[in-house]
Length: 488
Image (cartoon, rainbow, N blue to C red; front, side, top):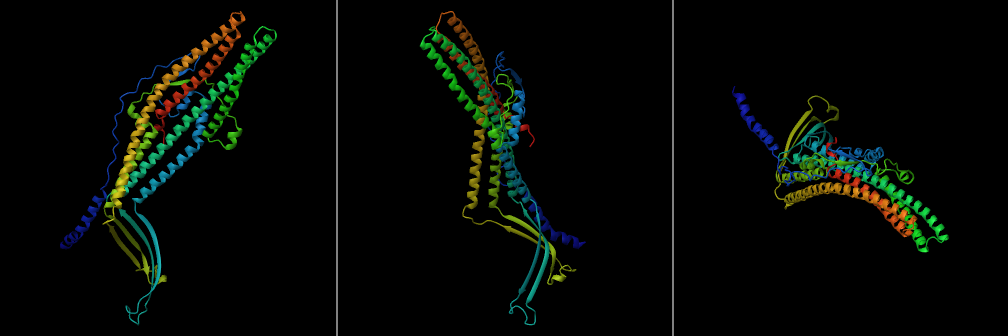
């Protein structure tokens, strides 16, 4: 009975030491992450009620920000273009590659926390000194060894845990950055498509105006030849026709530039950018405008916006790096074990009785490093401050963009309504001017002036429709576009 108690007493220090290592391994130096506190609004400013116009774009009320928000415009061509861009855009391909790199870094960091097992094979031939051996003994010695080696670093101070935390946050950051790129590409594609449809309509307006003014000029030329109108009226009609004709090549050039820009967003090949035609769907005045009424608490923006999630994960990663740097103040402990075969002769290596094993513990502690560790810690703390400032700035910008987008949605809807009324008024003015001219009550200059103002009003009306659609896209983008609910 005494021997077990004696063995237990002899093993107590070893058990106590192992228990102490387990407790130490649970220690993690460095600050735990806490989200920076910011004063957030309790509610959004209420947008105006949707404006239903007879001649303008129809409106569709939307209460949920869908991940595929571009479908709410109900244009199959737009949907196809956006989904094509999301599949092939080079910026998205680059962002996906960065995610793959961050995931590989995380896998490496996780593997660092686990033991490593390797194989070792060695062969040596040594001749000893004559002063150390008997002259009758062969001083040449062979040594052959084949073994498995197990190595493990005990994470006493949480350095590896903090490194793993940093790598995980870096992965989440790159995934959020990828979502931000996807949202930007979808938004840019929708805006480019709306720009293209607006330019198509403005070019059609200009071409109709050229045709109308050309017919009017022919009539004026005939009347001038008959002496019914003055040369001033004829020259003014020629000038107005030339002004409309000058708009056509400018609008055509801008439209063609928009087509190639859209091709780049779609990830088209150089040949496709040059040779392919861009599909068209609904006319710009047929596109329904989603009027957003999102039922979202302002605080949810912190989770919905991919740029905010990106900034927060960068802050979390920088915070964890402080623990990695501080762990350098403390000792490290590495354990290794060897199990294998060893023999003086190669042909007896696999024989019985040649087994060998070895256990090794190695600890290293810093004594004096001339301030290297302190400098690393201060650098990590400074990078955390930078990331914290960037996070706060991103949150402020996000709430500003939502507020501005809500205001823009209301303002553009009111402007479109006013532009529609103005176009109708200009058309009535032109009709009355023609009637007065035909009745002999006014000169043709009044007709020309009415044509000029109507032409500009029609161009402005198309631009107002484009701005209203763009304001809706901006609001979708400001609210996060629904990407936070996408599977990773």
